[in-house]
Image 1 (cartoon, rainbow, N blue to C red):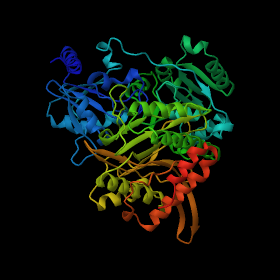
Image 2: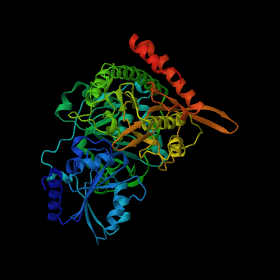
Image 3: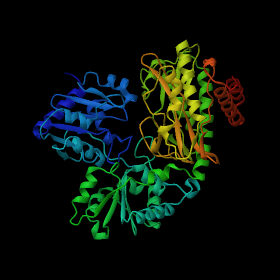
Image 4: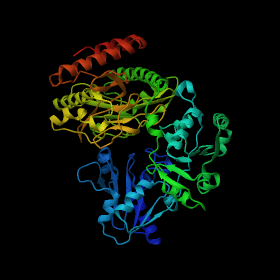
Length: 601
């Protein structure tokens, strides 16, 4: 078969025969459990052609399968065509995860190879539990034998953020984490999750597209701090990075080469570490093996890292920065939507995304998009994570619905916004879907809930209007968002999957229900919202959401009869606020247009 990816799968099977393997599992992540890996670790994409952010690949001698979730079903079916790779659907009823699927094959003592760098301890534990007689070979850089032009580990300039931007010094954060270690009766903690390290050290880089992160590991003891980071020739001559390294050294952080981490883990007891904490959900099998290869092995405590939860609760300085970011981003969005309203039938999806980028790039402090912009007209928007093609993207016609999901990284915050725009006359079904999804967004935004409530306990508020009409969406309703960090972060979330992490004042999440009809259209409405206290009484402490995003909701295709009075009031109040806060800083013609767009319904 003349298909690049089919041939690559066959080359992997030849490798399996040569090494007497039954199964190979390729993870869609990197050595740091990142959602968005750098090109070097886009191994699933290289083997299969699938470009989605979430997908794992399993290869046997008579089957190749890609496991991914509902966001990517349409995309996967298109990209896997001709490769011989079968789509395995996750987050659906009767899903069969990879470990259970392998167990169902009934192979006695299967020999399974994985990339030990890119599989976490938690992954392997699930595999061992499902297939207890398997012989598992964690091979670092498993694809090196096949991937001849594989990209190198990236390096980029590294900067630090001062307390004036982030609200807390690294000394304070390290002191807090050491106190946590004392509470655990431990001597050290190993961190390999890149967003945790960036937050803890107040550093930012650009090693991963859209994410201001630095490829690194971090080892903190009660007396010492070691940051294992790339220190190649490029970094050595970059003045920002040199200043960063000097600042860290002055604060007691020893900067070591990224490749030294394995040696250091093998020598922990020699430096007084008898008890080490690590998070099995983010620590790779390779790092765990490095610890076990030491002559004197410390006691390993598997603990959920405390960093994500503390990072998720933004301090007052971070919240102020996020407000500023959303004000600036709102001005960008209104300029973009006004421009789009004047271009009926004259621009395509790619040109629209490029223009939106050009507007964001004019904002002082802009550091790039927070994820790949989804610029999707008509049927394109039925793919929740549509990748807008440079060549051959659809013309945005003066009818139907156009969806744009985008965000910016600014020195003072991160944004993520989706607006679905009626470009002209819409069908009755488009109007109905638009309204029902907006109702779900509004109902969630109006929620009041007791302190201690987890996101999974209120997710249904965004779905109930859709469920009443026998409609639904497959992705989560909301995810956490970092401060000039990752667009997607935990541990909090809004989705149906059980997650017991309670929402707390200071957390920021997306709220983004939608409806998707393959071959027709897609609708999604998204704001970022801040969890805030709304008062106490004899029944307890109460929380609610404050919208941070500032950009109007178009009311031109609303089916008004479907909205309750409370929902209309919320929509009118929100749109009035958008006009009040943004119009003084917009050109007169755009302010006048926005005034018409935000008239009450």
